[in-house]
Length: 288
Image 1 (cartoon, rainbow, N blue to C red):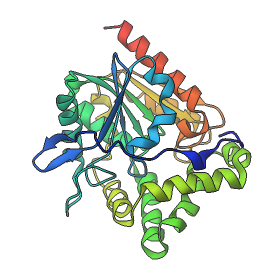
Image 2 (cartoon, rainbow, N blue to C red):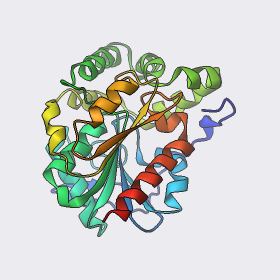
Image 3 (cartoon, rainbow, N blue to C red):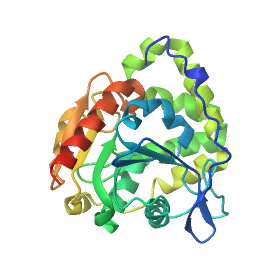
């Protein structure tokens, strides 16, 4: 992120007149849809809300239909006493596609939501045209490392609160280059957005769910959708070499390394990330 990036000005307001998409009994999802053409659906990773994606998808929305939404129990979507399971979140993705009249879409998962992208692709292969997994949480033999990080974040969150959690995860998921270039203004600007998008309950529920689900890497071999792994060379979970090894577990995948980027590479280089996604989508669509 450039040092002069005015992150404090990020518009996180909701379009209150937007109708919710009914996906399951009692569940209505807030969503935003911009652009036309092949649909790209962004899956939140429990830390983000739909409005956050606007400034990180502007270029893509000029060429494709960009759909963002809030997960059930997060942001402006329906709230329930019980956090949805991964299976229910996957059903919500399909229900969102149905409600928007989208036959199939490319799914863009980030960090924890790469697991959701995998699960939707496995359960509903006919609805998924391709996958982009940014900062995937999968390991070559399991997901233990990611879950250990989540447990440590959960301990901090419960004992010290949201601000302390942000202080812990910022140097872990943000690249060293972005940290140095952004300095204190970058740190404080992103913290403002982080605090505005999240509640304690939302984060506790999300971090708890992120430790669940099937971690078996053999599942990746059953994903038939073309897949792009977008991996920062400063990612906390995977080295560039292991990123390419991970791609080899899929039937049809490749790994693209983003220089000077961390676990959330779209923050480090929004233009570069959108360029990778656009090229992948166009190449995938040309094969149909």
